[in-house]
Structures are given as C-alpha cells and as structure tokens.
Length: 470
Image (cartoon, rainbow, N blue to C red; front, side, top):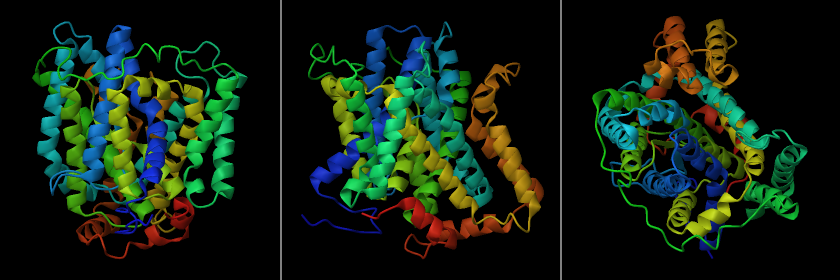
C-alpha cells in the first residue's frame, strides 16, 4: 500500500497495520509513567483498590484525548500537530497529595484546583509566548539535559523492581531490564526498514516473554474485568474551588509548560524543522486544556512525555498519525478494561529497561541543542551549564534537601527541571543579557516552518540521533 508523505514525514499516513504497531509501541513506553502517578496519589490519599482502578482508567482516557488534541489539532487554536504524546506530569505529585489530604478539600477540592489552573493556563499562554526569548539554546539545552538525567532515577527504580519492592535489585529484575536494552540495541543495529523502527517494542516483548516463562507474570483477574466500563465525569463529586489551591496548581501547570517548551525544541531538532510562535501557542494551550480535561474526568494535569519524544529520535518515525493511532489505543484501553489489564501485567522492571534508553535520548537531545552554544570563547556559558545542572539534580540526589522550606514552594523546589530552567535563565541574563542566542531564537520562531533549519538541526549529530527515516 502506498502512503502519503507530506512535510518531511510529520504528516505521513502509514498503512493501518504499521500505524497500529508503531502506535502500540508509543503506548507501551509511556504506560508505566502514565499509571504511576494515579498509583502514588491514590495510595497517599488512602483510596480503595476500586477507586485507584478508576483513576487509572480515567488517566488512560485523558491521555488518549489530550494526545489526540495535541497531535491532530483543532483549527488554529489547539495542537502542535507533531508526534507528541501527553501524560500526567510528575511535577504535581506533592501539591496534589497535600490538597487531597486537606479536610475541607479532598478530591473535589483537588479537581476544582486542577480545572481552575487549566483555565488560568489557557489565559496566560500569550504571556508565556512573549517570554520565549528567555529560552535561548543554552537555556533549553541545559533544561532538557537536566530533564533527561533527572528522569534516570525513575528508570533505574523501575529497572530495579519498582517502588517499594522488598527485593529491590534482584538478579531477575536487573537481568530482565538488561535483556530489554540488549535486544533493543541489537534490533536497532541490525534490523532493517520497519523492523528497525520497532526496536523498543521488540525489546519489551523479549523481556515480557522471559518473565512469562519464569512464571513472574499472572493474567489472573482478566476474566473478571467487564468488557466495557465508561469513565464518568465528576465521579468523586462536583469540584470545590479555592483561590489558594488554584494558584498552587497553576504553578504546576506553568511547570508543565516549561517542560514542554524544552521538549518542543528538542523535537524540532529531531524533526529537522523550525517551530513558529503559533506552534508554541497551540502546543502550550493544549497543555493547559489537558488540565481542564483531567479535572473533569477525575485525573490530573498533563504534559508532553519525554520518553515518547526519545522514541521518535530512536526510530526515526516522524509521523504524527502514529501518535494519533496511539491516542485511539489509549482510549480503547480506558474503555475496555480487559485490554488495559493485559498491558498492565508488563512488569515495571521490564519497562525500566526501555525507560533507560528513552530518557537517555531526551538528555542526548539536550546535548544536541547545546552544540550550537559557544563554550570555547565564552567561559560564562560553562558556569551557567555547570551550576544549572547541579541545581537541577538536587531533588533527585537529596529529596529532603529543601524539607525546611515553606510548603507552598514545594512544586518549585521538588522539580529538578524547573530548578534547572530558572537557574539557567537567571544566570544567562546575569552573564549574557539579551544575547545573540536569544535574538536568533526569536528570528527562528518568526520564520516559516518550511524555511531551512539552523545548522545545529541539520548537522551530523542529528542524523546520528534520528536514525532511519520512514
């Protein structure tokens, strides 16, 4: 079957079978991250097993809806229309638990705060866009490198067995994660054509088959699940609104926007294309709308997922239609619990092997952006990068480092990527002011999408990072 190729592969429509398979690969690499936040928040709020299961179904539904809005788009108002998958942001875990545990708030108060933050986020997108000059390549590259390295802690915990397991680091866990990595690399090295683009999926399949053969995977409970289960809006009651909680969650939404800005720049490098201000407006507006959708359907704020952008870099499959297919699969998993249960049996340590590669690719994307920064002739840039990376690693290296700080600062101080971004922005302004990189960034945003991309995006490092083209 022939397929239509438009706009350097972004609008390529692949045969249905290939789109489903590649979309499933996107779902699998993001699944553990997507369901981890409902598990953590639900457990901290002492919800029942049935309530946590509902949170997970709602999460998968909203992941699908918001990913569809981001990749497919709605007119000139929403969706960056690039291969982007959306999932729950880790930045909001601490404040969401704090709001949920407040006696007069609970889940209705939490969802009221999330919806309010989404509305505020939609309104402030133009202001965020006007401040994009604060994100020259030095800042975005440092932020993205910090994001990738910070996420390694999550991948390593998964590979070691997952959160809270008693035999963390058991040979079975490490061996299974290692098998996923080895098989992925072998397929990426010697696979040809479509097979090469499935390297992560084949690696996950190898790890899953090993654990099934060793009796570590149980499909018990699949038969008891209903075939169809609808996710109802406001299942936990109608939202309760409060200015203080709304402002706290607004800070979380702003954090997700800052994460997305760095990831969008990274994706632009991978796709070898420029992004306009309208692209950023549509993409960030979808981030904010994701919070509204999440609040209505009993889940949490959403952001672009780094591991899926890393997957685009590894496979070289640039079609946004693959992510649209993945969004449909996510909705199906939410509405058909038997399907979700089958996917959920993949052990976290198997997913950890894939996550090591995905998050590493995110850090590599940041390094690729930093190649355009003048470190040789401007030693101040080395200070900016070194200090910002160190500051960004604080929450990962020492989670209690800021334990004496005021509680309202928790969303800021517990987010390594935000600490890196703020540090890099402030130090860049201190040392470089409105530097050449900032001016070039604004010029690039004003250029058309079809213009020739900058040298950093078209050089040999990018060709190495993106792998085979579809």
